[in-house]
Length: 155
Length: 273
View 1 (cartoon, chains in turn purple, red):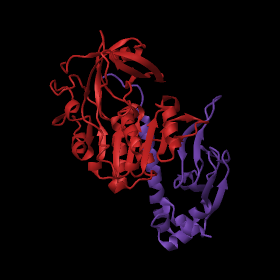
View 2 (cartoon, one colour):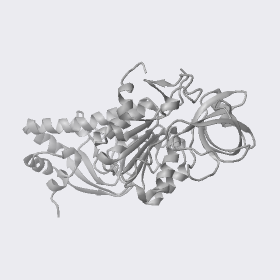
View 3 (cartoon, chains in turn purple, brown):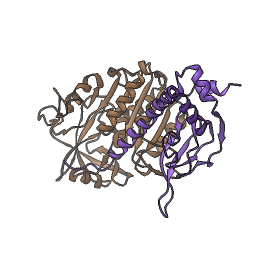
View 4 (cartoon, rainbow over the protein chains, first blue to last red):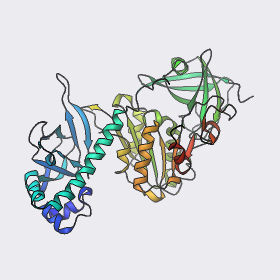
């Protein structure tokens, strides 16, 4: 059976991380399974965890009054679910729900923040990696804001 | 017959794809077939309204009717979309060059489509699948605004069910219950299974989407010369005479609409173009 350190070494967000840092990160992680339909977290609650998906899919959802939930984004194998754990006030911005059976590595956010505080070089490395996740999500959000598939406006 | 004279065709079938987009099947009133290559377009003439350049979206091998998927965005395209079975439309063409489906043989193919951009790619998809054994892995990555605005839903399901094509569909927004992905189509490139250095990429959609898709393909390592995009400009004559569709030193109706990115990239960086 693979150790958590071996499993997370295969995840894109941790690719190339030095072995000693992988061990530090792995110390805060563990394998997680969720069934399709399970709620992982809820908007506004403390972001005390994050996940990296090994299989399955998770939908980030938000709610409109008196309407069904809107799916903001779906996340799939290899992708990070959650960066709110890294940025104060450490609260989830959306609901997270498994839409397929999920296998993931789940991380204890307080544990990892503690290690990042104690080892600023590790903290900086994690921040750089999660900044890339945030930037790619922001760029995708900007592209969607352009509404490129909408009705063209006559020039 | 002059290339500027529209030939009368009869609308034989009409299917609503989305609230503002229709697929029309046309047969020439004089009989016969008009062969075309995947990626080419026709000038469709709604008599009394005007003419518009519309990509051919049918099967290049099937010998069936001429098929066009048209979005009603202006007076002419709205008139084309209103055409009922039995009505006549004028057709000039086919014009333009083709997707390099022959040159792509022997390697992987990744097809990236956004919105109505699936329509010009549909003949290329049909051509590749008709000769499936000549290609390596085939991935179709398609993005739209919402599930109800996706084209060819049944056909997408059929392609996905084949088992020899990776079909990933994503939308910008959806209600719970949508079983596909939510996100932008360029984001699908990173997770698709293809050998980037030897793959051929065919890309069509809104120009901003294509720029993001090309960036994702380049990040994966697809060479610029193997990325092909279908461009849209103001095509009017269709035969390279009027100059309305100039793009850099080319005319899209004559030299395009399909361009490789190594040629096209520098022009796209010129904001005035």
